[in-house]
Length: 221
Image (cartoon, rainbow, N blue to C red; front, side, top):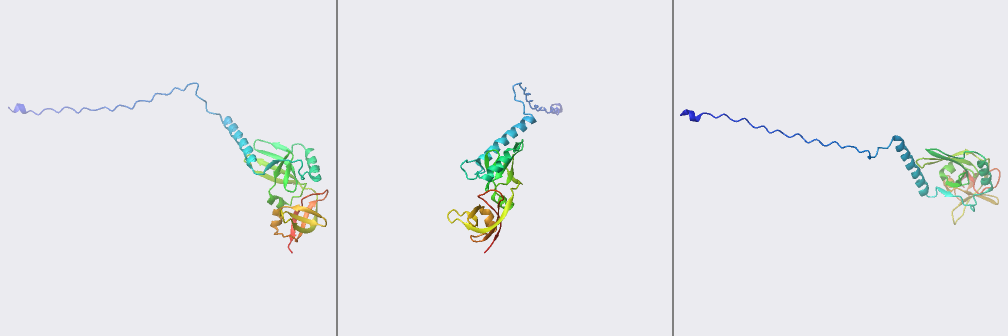
């Protein structure tokens, strides 16, 4: 009787095997896939982009570069003579992968380059360096579009003493001596806090007439 109540053996637990994640099929590269650019190709592309940026910077720089106007009075005797001197030299315009070097003549406000362009010279630099009409400058334009001027050959100059004057209409400052007068950079006058009727010491080219003068000092009345 007790045989009917024999303990039944428990069945072993069924283990569920986890399926392994399916392997992604290996993509076969076709021979038509584009090849990655070489380092030389990358550098060439960067160089091309930099050249385009330089052109854009020159184009959008307000008044930084402009064509020479043949009717402009800046084509004075002194400028013409100094420009002829530049043309006799070789390599006045030099280009490399990283910069462009141009020589030119200071006309009192700007640099007339040997490449036929006129470049604005910062008034603060012209005033500090006491640039005189006819001085030879060197302009370096790097691949970032930065303009760096340097005076490389000052023209022979003389010192004069006169009176500071100002046009009431256009506010242009002048250095006056006798019956002659020369234009002055406003930045040069304001640096010395000059006012009309003050005594002014100024520089002009020693040989030939000029339209501009460089302020050396101003004595306040």
